[in-house]
Amino acid sequence: MASVRRLVPLRASFLWANFPASGFRQGFGEGGFRQIATISSDPSVRNLVEEERVPDVGWLDSHDEVAKVREKFNLAKQRFLNIPDALERMPKMNPKGIYVNKNLRLDSIQVYGFDYDYTLAHYSPSLQNLIYDLAKQHLVNELRYPDGCLASKYDQSFPIRGLYYDKLKGCLLKLDFFGSIEPDGCYFGRRKLSRKEIEELYGTRHIGRDQARGLVGLMDFFCFSEVCLIADIVQYFVDAKLEFDASYIYQDVHRAIQHVHRSGLVHRGVLSDPHRYLVKNGEFLSFLKMLKENGKKLFLMTNSPYYFVDGGMRYMLEDSLGCGDSWRELFEVVIAKANKPDFYTSEHPFRCYDVEKDNLAFSKVDEFLPNKIYYHGCLKTFLQITKWNGPEVIYFGDHLFSDLRGPSKAGWRTAAIIHELEHEIKIQNEDGYRFAQAKFHIIQELLGKLHSTVSSSYSCDAFKSLLGELNDERQNARRTMRNMFNESFGATFLTDTGQESAFAYHIHQYADVYTSKPENFMFYQPEAWLHVPYDIKIMPHHLKVYMFRQACSRVDVWLGVVREYKEENTNGGCKAVGGGDKFWEVWICIAINSFNDSLIL
Image 1 (tube, rainbow, N blue to C red):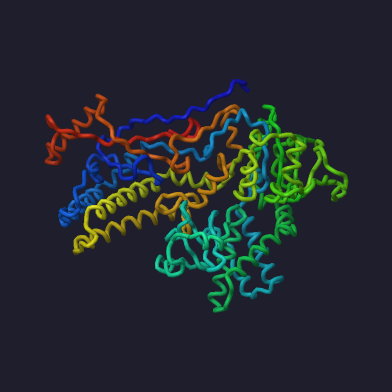
Image 2 (tube, helix red, strand yellow):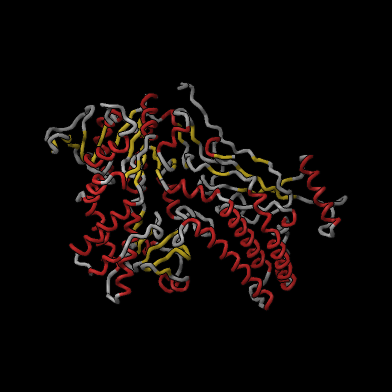
């Protein structure tokens, strides 16, 4: 591998695609916006959202303004079918890319640490069914829940990661970046609450500090079964007309989920049928070997017991490891039952685990010996023994709080592994999603135009009719995008309006980089510099379309504008550009806010 460090170029230049010069004006906010912008390339739609010097509303003729917006809306409906022509020219994001929240120089990283579950180990959806069923049986058999609860089954189409449960009100909530309840993301049991019901229950969609104290985040991949079981138990009590305290439901379900893990029920279930629950993956072995060949040190730190990790690693790598080779040889240190997140703040001592005798040694651990297994421990002792400084260590994990919050505060670099990221990016790249997204933003701009130019006191049949049609179109576009992800809660990273979710907020907080699998790092040189995209306003794997007001200075663009205006003048459309006229055009520029390998052109 070349020793010369490689700077991954930040391609922040603007591609002048063959979009018409006239188009949407700056309707998404000055200096950037949070939504994923969309475009239309058809010249006939270029005046859908004009940026004008709006005169004093006091003398605007509201009737004329309604008529203007109606005309633009009718034109937009005619031209919606031409939107895909523009979308074809827009870049697509790489589902296997590494996305950067904080600049990261891989040449400065000397130590790579990994969690096991859902980081190195890949599981099939059947694991969630197993956890759900075992926890459900524990509720009935041990905690004396009604036998009728056993009838429920895990529904993988219902939950997503990053939800919150309100222990006081019993609702499952999807929150946006600013802590507001998603209008279509509030469920009591399996019933979605209406906006009116949300307002009656919470007073406002925004969750205040006092209300936030009653919320618990469900952030890791194991939470899928927990979310579904909470909703099903609440629904059972509602249907049976039984009184219950929502906080007790959470405590009992959470205790049941913890029990099936800590008791080993899940571990034994997985190892008894690894073909059903584990997914073989030789790519991550190639990634680990590549790191070793480049002089990097590796460690494994997991909350799972050693026998479970060993059985899983043996199964996943049985087709990749040579005869007599051991996965343990890849790691300088292997720590099981680490008890994260307490590991990062406690002062628990390390214990050496005897694999043959299945017990813990009593001698003090003051060094990590090769091919040994260690239990428990704490970050303070770990750093004292290894002498590994914080900034030269990067830790990979899937749980934002247990895996990444502690290392982030301790000075380690962090990489979030989010398996659903790959699936969500593929959906965002689909023409159907991008088309619905384009329609949504066009309608959103027209609604903004209508509300900003028509007096709030103005009311007539034409206004009510137009407002109703625009709202219906916007809702249809939102519903289309939402259902492409998850019919109950939509996308993991986005709200229905294109804003970031609360889960995305935590990714910003605790993950320096994030990707769908650790082995995606194989697509980058070990000396690469990973840079935050230029002027990042939203999650870096989301395409950003910026709008810039530019003078017509380039000859080829100028000729295209003049040709377009002439055609419109001939057809009785807009006035042609003439002698003393001043005009500025809005150029739609695609800001490529990522390095080469994170972009598919």
